Length: 142
Image (tube, rainbow, N blue to C red; front, side, top):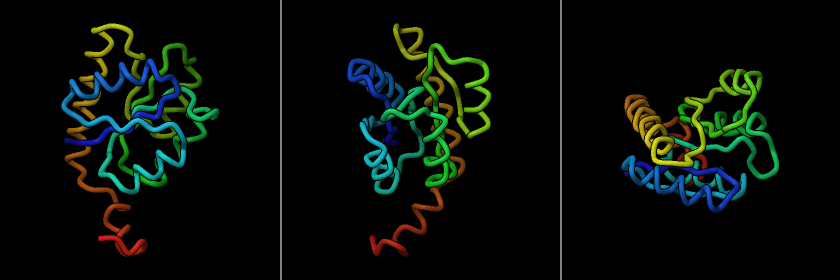
């Protein structure tokens, strides 16, 4: 199953996100810090990330470029209920794949499942990231 990084601050919401991820046929990889997220990006074959409007005290707009730099084909699904149009434009310009509402009920979870399925299909078409191909050379890993 394809791992999905959950970069979200609220533990109660993370549990709901894990449920939606599993219903979409993926494996949830919750992270609490930027270092953990980077570590999962380097070690796992994660091609999808669920990202809250803020993560580890920083705006999503500040961390999206970091994640996109590490994994060019990373499909970031931004979860934000109260985002302004300006914020969403900037997030799209930074490279998000989709903007979804945080799952509060089954309908919201179904929307997220569909977004995850689309992201998974797009990731499978693109193949592995460049980092995954080059990591063994630079890190000495297999």
